Length: 611
Ligand code: OXD
Ligand code: MN
Image (cartoon, rainbow, N blue to C red):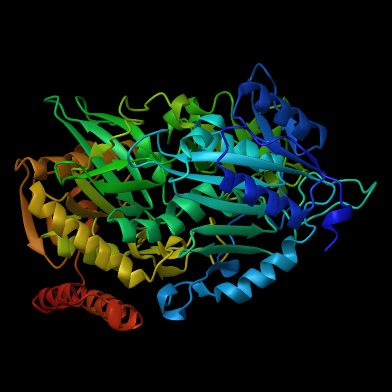
């Protein structure tokens, strides 16, 4: 190693920095050999400087300052557009602790590999030190981390997605645990070598070490791989911390709903990636009298509060949402949220300096520059925006952000919802009979694949708790933990009620049977009326479904026939579904809690009684 003859110009570490952080940063600098080290303070001036750097390097293109003030477009390398699940590793001493759903690697071997890759990886670049808080700074549920990265694009993204900078750093004292997160794009620059707009590497590793609460990410600047506060910390590492400390890291949006009588509810909902979570989080009710406000669109941390009831915070400070499919008619709130101060990645550029993506408007513009920088016209025969193109924007900019979204104590969760993208079998909505049944719904959740990760779009995969790519512990242990935390909350004064929804069921002709979007309020209203004992239900294999007349489906534009089809039970298809669920549970081996197997048996008996 050539650390001794390598000259690094260093920002002095801030005096308030905990010596453990300073020592780690020094070790990382010695390993990665950056030209300079910059400690980020999270100020507006610092952000302006980062943006200037990114404009200079061509990573960002400034959008028209009148049409889209303070906003920029980034075009990634076409090979770096999504999370790389095949390169994501959970490094536990024992393989069985990572479980059957994770790529496993032994910590010592992986550490050796990573040290090899990180050696000299920041040559010719700046290493930024990014202290951050997940949750409101100083809050009881808040946790801290420090990311080092050689990507100013990632620093800017972390600045939007987390509470980043000095305020977070100040909270980390000698007794505070914090997560070190090392990130490099894996593209060192030789002396005089010109940089590219989106440096990255063909070699990619996204590694979590749950026991030591460490993250190492190499080779990608795509948000899901590189904003390490998000999936890597707030889900993978946090699921391990939560298991030790008695709380839950959930891939869930958070909503506040006020009913026509003024009663307020909070709802946490898990959907696999790109199933319209942001749309649901920003729902604009079509039924008068109901108000829906947003607390979070992706991640929730749930912990028992002082009274034992489950409370939740959104640990993030921004939205990293999927752009395609977001339009004024489908999600006007998101459109208003990103009218300024937004970084867009891999969307198309209009000739007048604005952005466009499929679904933004019904009619595409006659000419665009597509996400790869090529000319595009409506008959180009390819999408103008990448299907996983994104917007990154501060949560506080959302016009429907709830007043309690950053309450450090969190909000009491009244209902938990699990949803997947299912063309068949799964009804529009069902209520679990109890917490254990709800955990079965979560454990067996399945969805058709989307573009948020590599893989064949449309293929059905089980995605338990929507956590398949995000669980830092054995998945079945995660279920057991949910069962335990809920049981304790139940004793203490009531666990949330649990529901399952499916906005995506199709008719025999391939049409969606349910309009979705703002009309989802009909379903949400039924869910909350169930909590108040005001809505009727009938029992079936999926639990309680709406009784005839308890949802005014005609008001949602759904005729009787389609309504019936949204709840149709086909004995043959459901038997196959249950068989598949059994094979799935069996593949998890002996750690599956008996309560989950019991629930499957109950469901199979109910299916057997169908005509
Ligand atoms: C996301 C995802 O980006 O779930 O939120 O993939
Ligand atoms: Mn997500």
